[in-house]
Length: 80
Image (cartoon, rainbow, N blue to C red; front, side):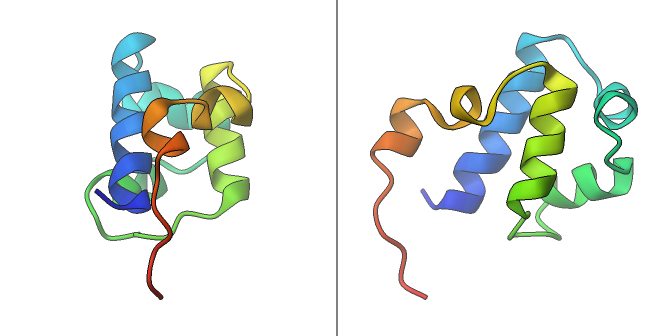
């Protein structure tokens, strides 16, 4: 996988874990629903760390919690 896919999958996992809709996350995080949808549906493949932080705030977790998974720990360097 790649970092974009891992990030998208993590957001989807957390939405399910916390039984939260995109709309609810948008309200709690202050991130526009269209921005969240663009990340989840592939239009935005490089979400900024500030956006991820706001989403984490909306989910009630830290950036550490977001990235502290085996998937992110084993992520390979990406060719740019």
